[in-house]
Image (cartoon, rainbow, N blue to C red; front, side):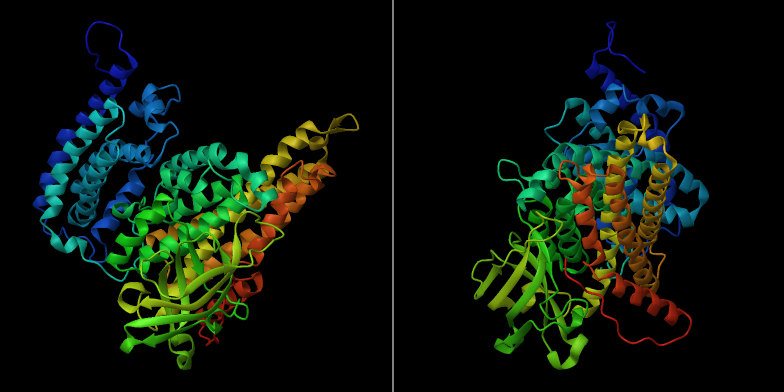
Length: 593
């Protein structure tokens, strides 16, 4: 460690010195590796990745990552002033600061290793290095008001990244774009990164969400002002986990999205369900399938929390049979306009949503091939017709997660501006979106199971009967063991599928099968685990003085929403049958949320 002056170092000097020494130490190696890359013959990144996606995947690797052991041990120490500065609870800008600092440290080591490995790995490094430069620059811009020590670290991180950026800039084909509805992520975050991300989200959920969970359930509404949970989640960056960095998101993968969903559900099932409807069903669909104009227009406000998003698929007569919808979108003015007329039902966030992804029949005679997805902006100027929210539902569980019926009465949309994907191509967008919806939502019941364990295990140690804690009785221990096994098995399956989805290892049929399996296992396990928690608490568990009765009511929703358990079994069986060479008929699999 280098010190400034003869006096014992102040906290600021200690932090600046640590950052300066650590980052500058890798400067020579990093520049040398970048110069070697310029001479590599095969330096083209796969054409399917956009520049934004490269930036985001680098952020996925960089964020919250520090290797344990050796010189990093002091950094991992919770008493370290550097760790307190960079890893203390903060907002999205704090997260980007961590990205810039940690990304610079890890990128230099990765660059040297990849350059030594030859042209194949050098190709991947060229993309990653370019992304690191962009991520560092974005972090610096976003965090201009942060501490001067962090600003110094960012300046050094930028210097480290510019050399790699120059290397990648000479390869224009590296950023060619493919179909966003099918392009997989290519970087899977390591365990350290996910653990640190989980730690940050869990801390946020404990501070901002958990204190309001009981009130949200009792009042069937989000907390009133001055509390604004949407803004709080937006400031933390959670509303756009998979959205592009340049449009206000974090640009991470489904692994991080699942972790965020689990930790928010652990604090409040209702808030987490609304969060999923916003961040996955709406934001992720626009990020995957929208045009650049749609993403630039809609995503910033959605990611910041200034606007709430929703997805509208289900109808009074079209639940599991999602493609049997009756909402009509009639063509006008030679196909330049569409007029939506009809109803949607079971729409999560419906009463408060300002931006909706809506599916409607544009060519009813074509059946499933006549569906189109639309981006509906309730506050767009000059919109004709009425879109009203009716009948906010009084649900058994997930109370506070607003659910209602939407009525479209001649709502006029522009074909060029508002169509998501292609006209009559909505079924493909819908079905692929349902797969990722099931994957992210599968983490919801995992969070509820963990919350049930959080309540049942301490209670079993405190509650005494027959002169001993009830947790010392083998039957109670057996219940706790079963709860732990169910929770751990569901989490393992969900995270395995999320990693495979991020890495693009699964073909569409297998992805659909695995996502359905993940939410099927997690949902049914959650109902069982939460009821077991009620049993462990006995009479207390049956009262509202303890959270387990709320968890049990919330858990049941996941066996119904996003496709019922029965539909999930049909999907899994169909894909297995197809894999064996059979030909299965059409299966729906919608279901409202």
